[in-house]
Image (cartoon, rainbow, N blue to C red):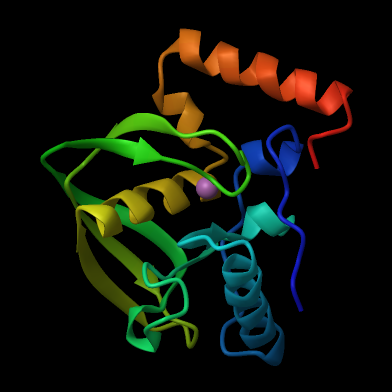
Length: 171
Ligand code: NI
């Protein structure tokens, strides 16, 4: 099933998600399938469980947006174990639709996570994948990308979102 994406303003997006403790259950398989489906419906390249209102440390990434099954990445309990270099580029988020900002991230990011069976693995991402790793793991820690832009820009986005919400045009 496709879940609606939680929008900026929902407390779940700014709270820390809980570790996954059960693996390879029908529930976990279903949740991950639903996360991919919800992400593709929203035309995103990454989705973290809190974005569909589920406080669990699960993220899915697919830079091909459903075009190439080999690019599907499932991360359970991921953590960044190494960062290198920097890159600055435009970033957006399904939970803050209509906005994009320049964000500086590490250029190379090494992640340690568990797969759907609970087996640990490590993976290195560069450029866009490094950005996706950083962005999605931030979500699991209750952190949105706008916390990486200047206070001035962040306030501007907050004000615009509040206006849209008042007009009934946010969510
Ligand atoms: Ni996001």
